[in-house]
Amino acid sequence: MAQIIPIRDLKNTTAISERCNASREPIFITKNGYGDMVLMSMDVYNEMFAEIRLARDLKEAEEELKNGKGLTFEEFSEKVREKYAL
Image (cartoon, rainbow, N blue to C red; front, side):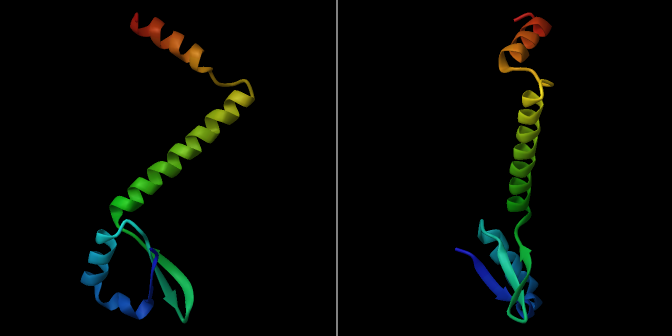
């Protein structure tokens, strides 16, 4: 479940750090009742960023295939077999 805290609660950095690391969810920070920032643990951030990168790479590969620039799986597999004598 999403955690939402006011910006004034950021004074207790140890407690915030513990909350970030105990939860797999981001903590939303509000300022004057409006969304302002998002905090999350480094592990969650790195996992999320890796997923974003993978999705971006897959989208780019799909575009290349649509435009006739990439290799099909069969073509790629054949090149790997030839290169490594499989």
